[in-house]
Image (tube, rainbow, N blue to C red):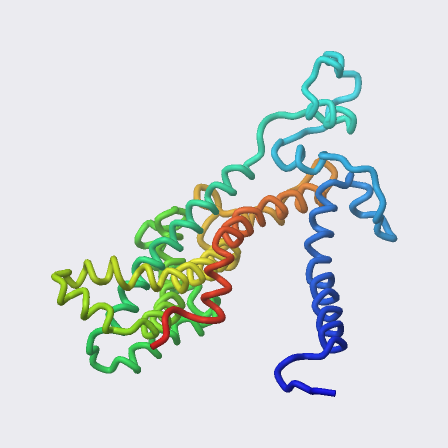
Length: 312
């Protein structure tokens, strides 16, 4: 009977498959629970023991996008049949809609700040990484370590200085201030990751382009960037995940105009208290942009993590 050191046996393959399936189910369970809670009624969401089988409803999503108040007993209203479907859901609980909620505004703020800071972090990080990789920079290793060390600082250690600085500069509760802050935090990660990918691209490619008459910028744009696209895409995903989920600075530096979704979702309060279906619905919708962005770039992400760019 032949035995291969590199080729796993059928038993090993089955065991590995079972481990992967179990791990996937365990990691997806909280996500599935959040999604299903968004389709529960308020009593079902807090039922004990927790309800696995329930009657689905979009009450949580209606509560998420509307502001409601309790109707006074005896108030004459038009028949429910002539009301929009979402108003009928609200009237069944004895409430009425008084206007839209601020979730859409907070969600749009997250999109602007998250994707805006990711764009600037990638642009600045790519150019800085190229300079570190291709030019002789004095104290290069020390500078790279210093850049990386800024990522190691806990946010709470610099929260008060940043708050005072933003207040003096008028950047509190502004989109520009939050984009600038998240870009600064993500820049160190972008420089380090992209620098590793550019180092793997043979410099001979650029030298051949320069001999053919390309300028330095043309060689960078037409030779280096296409081959570093894998690393840039994977870095963009990591930067977006941080900016999208960041909570501490968002709570400290925003309160109205530029407040993002993470500090807003936990504060969703219904007429009778904490509205857990609305919170779960908001969390579900909040997952979608990053999930879609990651799925679009999933091929680059896998290649970026496992390979890098082009090896000599």
